[in-house]
Amino acid sequence: SLDGTALYALICKMNHSCQPNCRVQYVGGLSQQPLHAQLVALTRIADGEELCQSYIDLALPYSERQRALADYGFQCACPRCSAEKFGNA
Image (cartoon, rainbow, N blue to C red; front, side):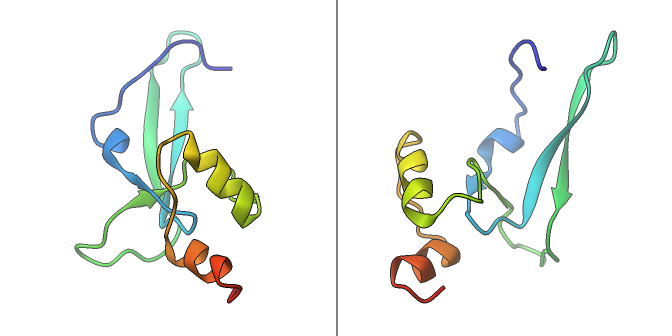
């Protein structure tokens, strides 16, 4: 388990997507080792493309994902949510 709080200056600025192109992976943090955050690409990322991570469990159905994201103060309109909202998924 993690004990404490950390602020990663660049990662904290990343937007959410239910179809993210990267994820944050935490490594270290054992004994005397500092905890590090690594950004791992999930897809091929083009130059200039926005890096997006998921703030929530992506296994949730559309309505539950939207409910979970309400805690963050927004409604997701990523390509996945847009397709699922209109039944095109």
